[in-house]
Figure 1 (cartoon, rainbow, N blue to C red):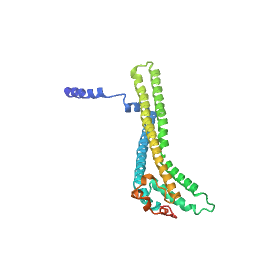
Figure 2: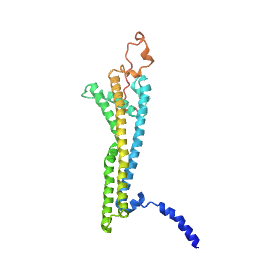
Figure 3: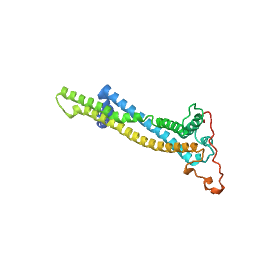
Figure 4: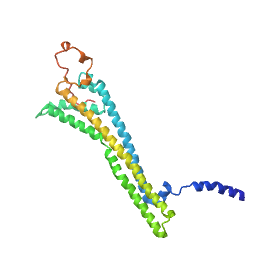
Length: 268
């Protein structure tokens, strides 16, 4: 019986020696409700930050892929209605084309018409602004996390130091075994705040830069649509030059390309 007891004690000794009394969970248990609240808030902020990062990256990549399709085949169509069928139904580029066709049709219905150039420019600008607004959704949360997470962690740090001072006052001595737990808790909260804030700031700056690049491409496409409509299809981007562009001038028809088809409803 004594041998069995000694054997069990010897087996348990290494496990007890390897146990860390100052780990994350131990610090949270010592910190109580405040430490757990700070930890849960920071974890939730981190989860939502990465969720926004990945969803915005997929949204941006989808628009970038749509832009490649536009450059590949859009301007080879006879008119805007035919060209719109080559774009995805809910794409940003399709929305601009649909708004352009709708604005062109609505201009003829105005009782006090304004210049068509100004009407089309305002309509396309409004469409482009709506796309920019959708691209910017969620970025404010990333900016908020990047600016507030360190201070939330600092709050946990202050509480941990306060608990360390209380222990020192209660025990009358500042030995390492008295203050190690609360001070460790304080440092952990500081580290958590930085771990949450830094990725959020990096993600925010990266997504902003990608949005700017996307909006530059959309602005160029919008300008091309505007010029196409104002010239009744005679003006197209140079990148759209196809076999027809290589035809000698003497063999080209004198008439301008077909005018874009007007529709009474948005192209679906």
